[in-house]
Image (cartoon, rainbow, N blue to C red; front, top):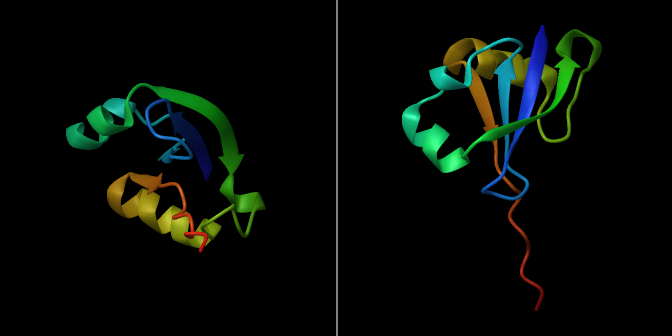
Length: 81
């Protein structure tokens, strides 16, 4: 399965994964408004990867099939004390 990865211009380190060729307009409206205009950063062949940065290919494929998208938010930064 091919997957397109988009970055958000509004939220740092926030990415939206869609099945290759899927339409951004099919993402829920509230998410589209919060995410802002998408910038495509890459297309990934999930069949050739076991793991991406923060999710396994198997889990990503499951999300894409069930909801049509996967939203990766920026990791929580640990407070430095």
